[in-house]
Image 1 (cartoon, one colour):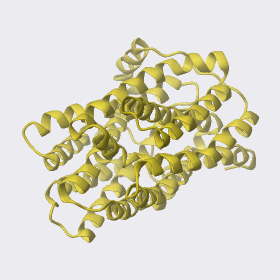
Image 2 (tube, helix red, strand yellow):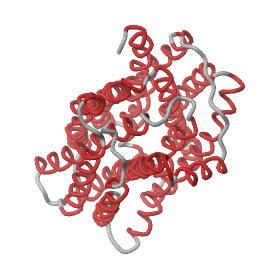
Image 3 (cartoon, helix red, strand yellow):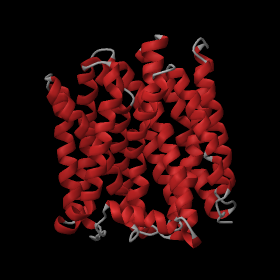
Image 4 (spheres, helix red, strand yellow):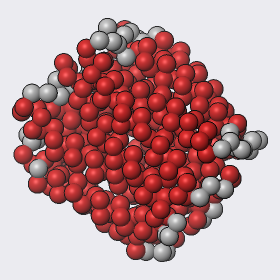
Length: 390
């Protein structure tokens, strides 16, 4: 990256680190937090409601940006997120905690989307893979240490997890308020459900069909994340009986590939190879390890560590190659495509509980991971039909 681009990238990457650290602290304990307040049967419903609220907010976001500016909007939402986290740490009323949990989920997704738009604004196609790879690596470095810290804290109380998450969000908040104001304002056009479906419909054929296929893989990746984030902690803690400290250590090992692989793969995507072959191999790894999770209930800890590590080798590879592939075909003016991509996360949190409800009606959480493996194998169809960039 050239110097000017690096100067603009640095505050965004730093803000992403602290935003990701806060997200990593709360992500894997969220389902158990809801199960403790209500019951396990409510976990999927709560996540589905949070996802629905997020989707609505994402469609309203461009209007707020056009009216108030992207910097003011980002700053206001970051402040709101801080106070929501403080509320989760301080209050104990169940309806209030439910509302705050949904708000924290929605705001976390929105903040990631806003920073993504900033990064795309400063990127150029010749450096897309490296910029996206480095950006993802920095954010994922924060995720790497977060689960172990959360595992230690949650043994005491969930309130401590949310309190620390609020504290680590403060540097990101300050950077957003005082450093991002130096970047030029830019706008994104309004979106609607009609626009979204029209974009996908017209992109399914012709020269943009590759974008639709990349978005399909984006959704499958996020479905994998949704099932893992919501149901893997429930499997390990509630069904198998692992302690939170052990789970935190496992998740730290699991997330290591995101730190060590994504930047090198991003560079390779810019210089030596196309994304298609790596994405196909990544899907195979993710499918194989999803099947392994469904059969590994009695496995020793080191086997669990290996399975989860390899699963994230696949996920990290698919994520960076999908990002590189997609952003080579769009720019910051294609906010609708970026929005569809980022909506894959909340939409997956709508689909995952529905899928889980169906599967759990005749099987167990272990069965759910086998079904996930089958869906990942099906995703090889659009992956093999991608038009490679090299």
